[in-house]
Length: 101
Image (cartoon, rainbow, N blue to C red):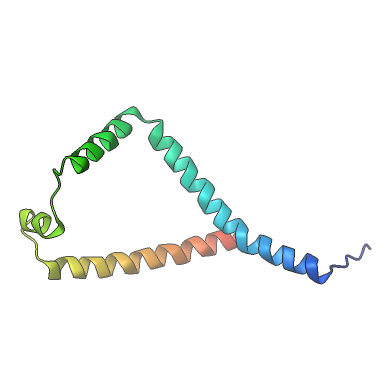
């Protein structure tokens, strides 16, 4: 049986690796998603059109947008709270999944 001996530096390096690998995995996933979008001609044209709309001031403010949808800010606040709860749940599930890998 082989016995491994780790120095304090080894332990710190292993700790750093275990902390950084999940972050690296997320960055790689984001990069892949970005490349997929950039490789999709229709999406890139849509993004360019949106950028042009922004530069030329053809956008609605948040309150104008809500008014067009016949919504008020209280309704949006409720939906936002629910979205935050769902996002937190998904992040918890994601971290569980990453920890198992």
